[in-house]
Length: 448
Image 1 (cartoon, rainbow, N blue to C red):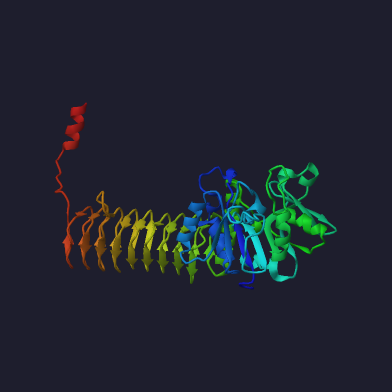
Image 2: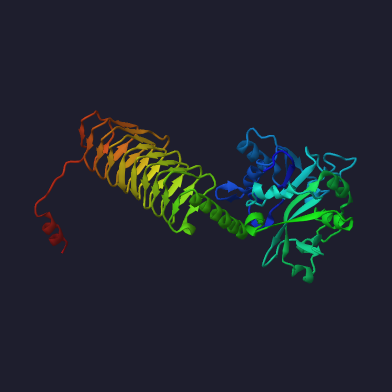
């Protein structure tokens, strides 16, 4: 794969009105990752010259990018949308930067430029590299679809790309064409410099279309090459329906990648997995599980209907119906059904069922009985619970943090523990039980 040989321009300034959302379209997430971030990650594999074109909610997007990529050297360009709307307008310098000659292309580092949209979260670096692999003046991404509704149509003549007609400008005959413009282009620098100044906005939308270059280049007999791809590679996202469809494609990719690396998925299509999840060793994930954030699963089994969020699971079993919330490390441990763990470090323990373990450190050999909860929040502050080795915590106990239980301690079932316990202690904290003989019969007789 070639690197640092082409510049990449990502157009990310659209309004995304069909998304019906206050969130900028390119910042909607696919499998836990913003669409724009997914594209940038792939672009970074190919180039060190990345230009990001912004307009709608530009400051919000720029701030998010600077936070996520603190050491980036991206070039940001604010589109002069009022004067030069549209995809070609996005790569014009515009009067904001060049009043003398606004219709010239953005300055790039390299003589080859790839242009793509910020709403194409499925694009991969290896596919993008195809645009620059063989010599041509222009390369165009094309999708062959059963239904190309919503896309610009690619018109071929003698197997060469003649022009692209946007759907808003298409006739009924043109709309029957199933070859769609994917919105990815490759241009030599001299091509952009020649044709960008020639583009006008004489169309139904009064916008400057980048696709007009194709028709101009065809008339001049330039070499326009097509890069054909599947929808799962070049799909654009314009609505929440598209977003869900794109996420299904991404999930299929992530599941297959994991399975190729040795992970067992039980009913794969029922499992949700995000982009940053990692697996090592022998792992098995059962149906309807959810793996989110930067979770790492190492030699572990996640049973059905369990949720892992931003946590590390090592040589352990979770679930069924287990929930591991962020900032947890679970090692050599069994977490059973309906047990919730949050921001805790568990090393070699058992918590079989119906417990809450929050802000805790628990060492090996310790057993957490059914219904045990760590009371970690006092209404203002979260407090830590620290439990040593070989501690037996009886069912239904409440551990009120801040609290430290040393090793080899037995806590009687039903106790509320508010004081630290020393090694070897038996800890009991219950009200004294009282049995009143015959009270049942007396009570119900009086009621009659």
